[in-house]
Image 1 (tube, helix red, strand yellow):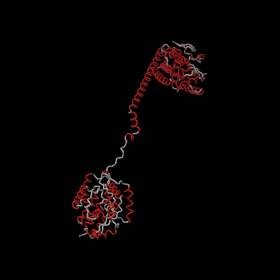
Image 2 (image 1 turned 90 degrees about the vertical axis):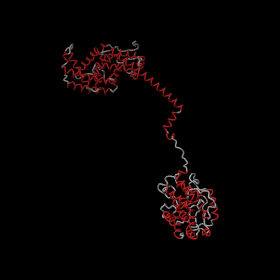
Image 3 (image 1 turned 45 degrees about the horizontal axis):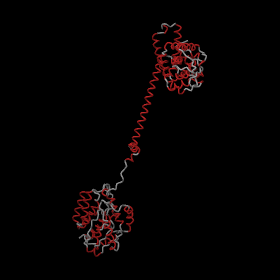
Length: 359
Length: 212
């Protein structure tokens, strides 16, 4: 290339000459040669070392992997990492013990069982027999039938002689003689699918003897010629007849009491309730039953079965003839303060007590 | 043992560092396959043989490229250390020497920077001392040419490396733009463009330094 700039041309020639001179003077051929060979040797050493490390690492990794695979800890670790839920297998759903079930579910199961049995059993106390009964006793028997029908406790083996009236025998039966007004069927039917879905047996918590109940149900079914409507109830009561009203379960859905449905009753609570229940329905000792109900309510004022206990206490008061106390105890139920539980029964009892039960 | 069989290599000697001006006969050198294979394997003997044959020319080019003797020596070292790995991509389309120069260009960046810093420091020192005319053993004319060369060196330090390489290859080494394009690996037109801008900037820089 021809330089068109003399200045640059001179400078280039000078630079070219300078380079040549420096090349002659400053050249360290042997020194640079030695440096080059030394650098190549070091690089080869480093390469060999890296290759050795790579081989050793590969052998170690493969050996460890093989050992871990055949010993099983690698698959286990992989399962743990990949699928923790698989390792931590949730336990199979436990069959919840009866004690842990809510009282509401227990009640529903009991009622469902009772409903499942042939219970369309109208019961009518012969007027003559009912008239022989003292009014209070008749009322208490009727109420007992209602309460016992809805009771969750098992019907203890009842002696046939415990009751001297058909009402008593009816009361002893755990099944619920059905006496329902037509208009109630619709409401009742609403609850039936739910109850029917519940298990018949509820182990753990005391249950009425189904077989016994069935047997006992059938006999009064044969004896009871006709059903008694609610409208006739006051008349029969005036004659001293006892009318088994509708099953308490149908008219008395367990009210939703705050803080009571959340936890099942404890063993101690159940024990207290059983004692009172036995005194009330089995031994038919109204005085001792009243005391037992009072003890239960003192210990478990907000217990799972407190509402039932209060109602049964009211029945005990009716049996003892303490009309005023019984009316006061039944008033909350009649007013629906307990969520409609036993409301109709309570109202009927109150009508009877207010009208003709005073001695 | 130096391998010369089947190698038509233009022998270089230190005193023949002006090879680029007489380089034409050996513009294409045929390297034996055996030597190339040894180079690719990193055989130290093969590297030494190539060093012995081409170190002078390479050093001269490095000196002109980086503008500093010590930096040029380091560049030569780097070129021959990188030769075994680079030889794997050598397709023998050019001479081995040309291939070495291309390796030098690729490794020149850091050496150019270090040389520029060194030259700048030396210039500041020289300015503090005064002119270089008092250097012993150097006739005035030689000093003048030396100062001109140093001035051009300093001006080259201010150029981008790509323009500097184009200028050194085409102007100092007196290679054609085609040869320079093959060495650098860019189109010929690019080399010409870089050369144009390099000359323009060098002229302006030398004028600023008062070179006439």
